[in-house]
Length: 346
Image 1 (cartoon, rainbow, N blue to C red):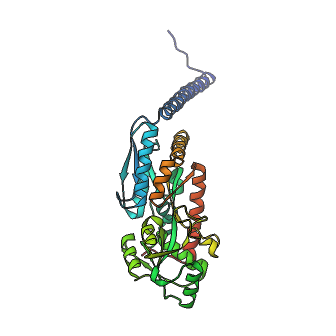
Image 2 (tube, rainbow, N blue to C red):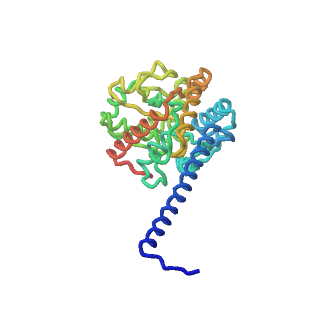
Image 3 (cartoon, one colour):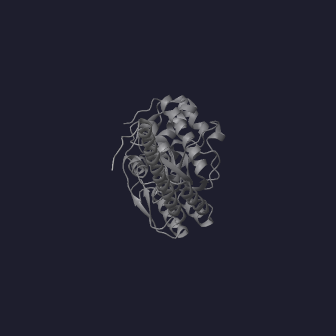
């Protein structure tokens, strides 16, 4: 048998066909992998959830309203989803450690976060090195509850309204002290926002926590504080503290006789601690929507609304899109205030 060398044309044709064959094989493999992934992904979301879900609460157990609300969410979601939702406390760095953990978790709907205003909308404006971006690295599912803030003074101060507080602060610049649970927290920001909008000078006294701040407020060592109703309601009803204004856009169901701060001359004054549900970014939208609908049912349940009121909170539902927009606006709002007062961490 004799072999004849290939001509240049024949060699060229073989090379072209070889390339075409490799391309077709590669394309087939890519399509197989793609549709196989889509099929598996679709199956995963259709059967979701088929195992227990971990709900990260970024605060210590039993230490705050956020822990109580998180456990309430976990219990009710377990009932509605037919799978156990297990609350897991991961405290640290003012709520940021738990938030970071969820931001880096697998985006499959089995690790969720009890998202709170302080670490998600305030934190990025205080600390530029958080290790995550709440807006980019977390997917909002829905808002669950709102905890109205109320401004109070020690009853011995002898004032009953925001206008009287402004008048007293104007007459005695830097003579009044306001307490907070720490620099950069919502109580601190509430005081700074009041100073800014009322154009008065007051002294901020940061404490290591709400308990220490409350002790000095009740004793009269500091004159005022702005924080969630949960910590204050008992003392307001007992007459030791005087509620002079609700820091939200409308009156609270819990203290309906107390006017808002906005209605007393500081239009637009609003400070609250909201609580929502978040997942890692890139979590499938079908899972986000499923969880959002379940959260809406929980928020509208009369029994849940009653339980929230006992904790000094109010039911407030937002869907994933609304919460995403709200997080951006809330972050921008506090960023503008922090920049204007040149706030620094202690």
